[in-house]
Length: 67
Image (tube, rainbow, N blue to C red; front, side, top):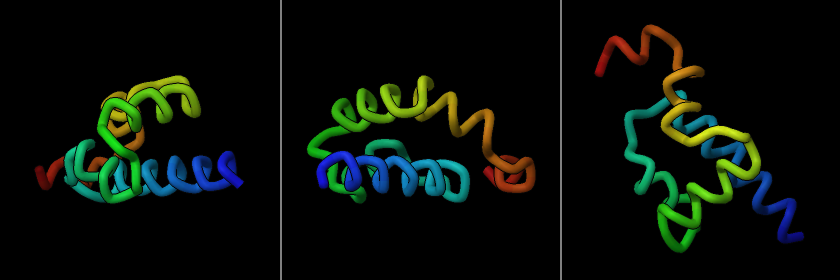
């Protein structure tokens, strides 16, 4: 159950990173991680990249231009 929940949290984090301007800390807390550091380790372990790097590579250009 724990691995399933973690996988779902990471999937949702990927969506939020691409679709919102929310900070990584906000996303981490919203998804139930106890800290942004815990989220960063879990995200990097699951995706082999940082949350910031993932956002930069996967964000649609139209969303990135609105910032």
